[in-house]
Image 1 (tube, rainbow, N blue to C red):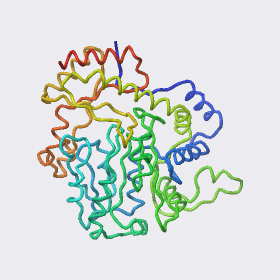
Image 2 (cartoon, rainbow, N blue to C red):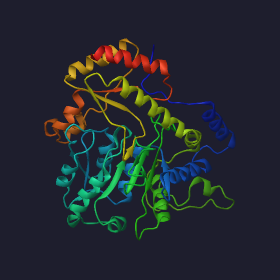
Image 3 (cartoon, rainbow, N blue to C red):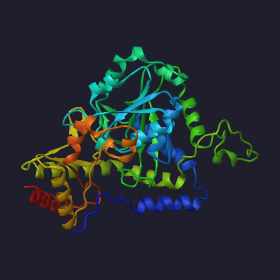
Image 4 (spheres, helix red, strand yellow):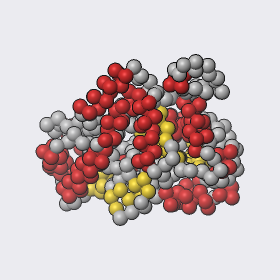
Length: 397
């Protein structure tokens, strides 16, 4: 067999929707992007959503919306992909990394509280593999240090504490204590990259909770300025008869979503419940098959939470980094692509140059050295799942 790690699940429905967009004469940000935003907001139980060209852009523009910059600090996990932290550097703020909890892929919530200073303006928790963080604990941490908080713009003042900006690149469709990912954190940033559960090829979206004293429409309009050069009218508005004139309010950025991208998302949305259900079935098959071997899986479903089932993370207990790498190679020789999520940020050159040392993040390192991620996507058939289970058990037993 030749089993890919995470190919996009594209059907004729997506193709037809894209073709419809191409024939419409409107291929950049337009009616389909606006419709996709509306559907995302409804799905996440929020008033508004803004679509952009990546989750990275969503996080960066949110930090800019919050007025975060030089002299400020933003906390995130050492165990994540670079985008969770690079956006902090982009806005000129200081990156503050915290370790995961022991034997956990999620942040150490006690470490978050200890890391908060009077310069901290936001925290970016990471919903890894589709499993949401314990946002009650995150909120407890920021509220316990509320007395240190110093606001520097109107939205910060209205929130009145360190803002919680969720890196929910993996968790679109997940829920936590009866609330959808998208309505739990102050701001939530999703990814619709090609490997994600719901894809627009590239792309992302940001949602937010209502903020007392701040109009949601004002937040939406500010995002529109940020993602399209600070231009007072988008391209759709400028096409109206006599409506050519516009203003540049400030020199901003260019990270809007196009209608071609949105059309993919609209088609995927129609079958997203089926996609999530299939992922859940695959996870259940894996969990049952591996209950007799010495591994530890990330738990995707529980009494108070449901994952989006984005990645199947496994720790090979008692195995070294070399053992793990050898297993990845053996799986590859059997035609099965696997991956590692993640190599902690302090192990990368960019973060070493910023002064981070992996020795200061022992829990993250221990999660990494024996982690392997198995294929989990909706193009897998039952025969392939059975084959993956057999090969993995044979190699690791």
